Image (cartoon, rainbow, N blue to C red; front, side, top):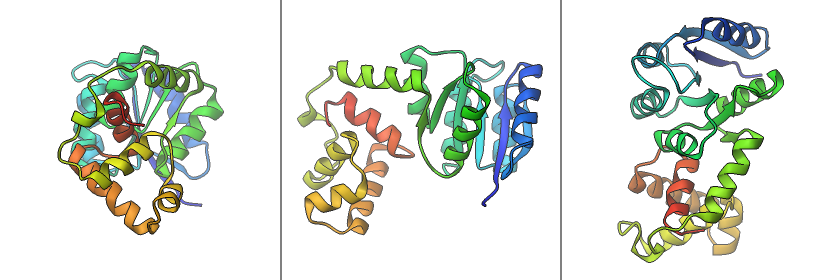
Length: 214
């Protein structure tokens, strides 16, 4: 089993130590560092290059949103999993736009936290149950500019692929429906992420849904 290296960033020392103990006791998870503020989280993440950063949002010096953005911009392969008390839509989507691959509330059970860290370490995107409901509500109620005016840099085929990604379809299904190879779909997705200046699929979905695609 692949071991995922984790950095824990939280300004509450007791909570941070609890997380460190939980993760250290879990097979295939290794805590490589802890940070008590956002600036330290950024510095340690760039120095230690963990697979996952477990990030609180409300922290001194640099908040978790800005810290996430700095980490992902410099090291896009690092997966940031937000673990916070903040459950408002603005915080959720600010975190996703910054590059977070997961979002959990601090009321989550220990097993949920462990599974989320493992999932993000494996490259997946994950939201806690309550957050997933908010994401779906946000998407279903979003009203923004017409999709036809959005993303002028995309080709027509890339726009179609983005719409299918935003609708929740995986690469295999997109390939089947468009009569393309999975490799071609992956190439389209990579080009889309570059043009949209996003780090991963979840960020692309947020941008697309806000523009009315999907």
